[in-house]
Length: 366
Image (cartoon, rainbow, N blue to C red; front, side, top):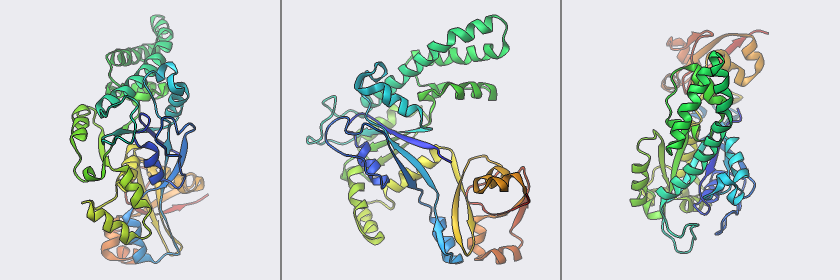
């Protein structure tokens, strides 16, 4: 399931430093704009404590976590929608992703230059928003005339499309992102999806702070919270430079000691990966046996046959049933056999909607 989150932001806000912490694919990190030209793609392991708990009970030959793809996209600048700073290429890279991680600089450091000379994360956010909105407005303007003509000729589907396009154009013209437009039904959602608007992608704001602000944030973070309070978007506070130092430590114990010293229970990188996973509307089901304990990714809301198809297309094609154990029950009783004996395993058919953490055995016939 190759869904991707794209890391965006102005140059020199810490995107590539953060990406390097996330991935073994080392992006160049330097104190000058545009040090990232081609998008770097990292396949990132999703932390999941449930795998370790299951492994302690099952003693499998191997443990296999699931992954998410993160793309480090070069820094946007004012005028990108007109091609400034290689803008057309960068905007095309964003269009190919499924969600956006927007990194904002929330720290002072005279040794790290800012493209606009001063630190102001709200202004930086607005710069990026404006460029994406302008490109989306261009997309709408290029299509709305055609659907309006078709609507005037009596085409019912075109009438619906013209209405949706019009609402998007009004919002974008007022400096609002496409995600602020309320869609009324599945038909409108389908029309919106086919537009691939940049500002319709779900967004996560990452406030990159200094070491001292990693646990509680700072005034810059407070300003960002106020600016995005109506966007229904998650905000994470991460000290990217500190995270890079944590990543260099050899052992888990050393990393936990470092985190404790700065007042954190979990690294910002782990929190970011989990948030990116949620941002893509993804959840995990599990399989557990002597060969392996493994996490599998599926789209939230998927039914049993679709989840079976994540393992193999034959499982979906010949799906008979899914035998489900809830994670908490497995941990409580200690084994699959004990869960069965307690009557806690349940059998589900084609209409069962999977829940995050379900432990499953699929029965199929092809």
